[in-house]
Image 1 (cartoon, rainbow, N blue to C red):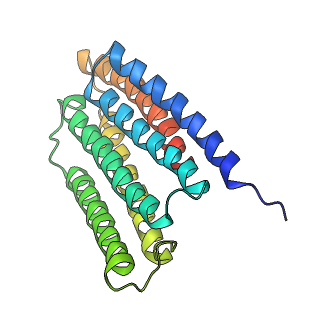
Image 2: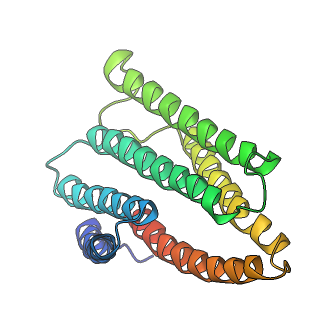
Image 3: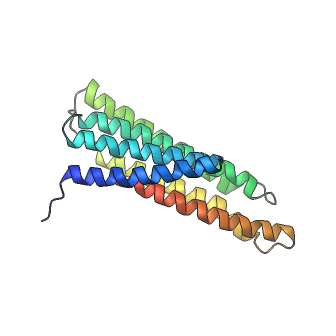
Length: 205
């Protein structure tokens, strides 16, 4: 079985997320839109997580401190980007009411993700520094961790559906609306592709 050393892996991840963060910041500087700001924030959070992984890999930081920072940074980045995408949906669909079932589901999924993340962070901190049931080099409870990851995937999926389902539904509209929908679909696809690359960077951290 091949064992990959943690330090080279962390360095590669940091270089990748640094490139993504630089591109995100350059794009935000060129056009300061809310979604580009969210992408830049998400990329910078991913870069900080991967950079701290190098510190942890060199035994200069306890695993508990690293996990706590990752909890906070990931929660901020995911909530910021998803909330921005939901806000962007208001302008995307002037022909439809934004307060639909899928809109409520998107908001609820973000809230549920945040509640799970805060609960997991609180439990982990209490277990490490309060009850001492976990030591400072313990990882979070695995099933809670995967519940949070599934909640994150659900929130992202519902938000993407909120952006694109009404757009496709009204894509066959006539006149100016049809042109606007086509342009918005192209822009939205480009933005979501960039967000996907940024998400990969955070996953590699």
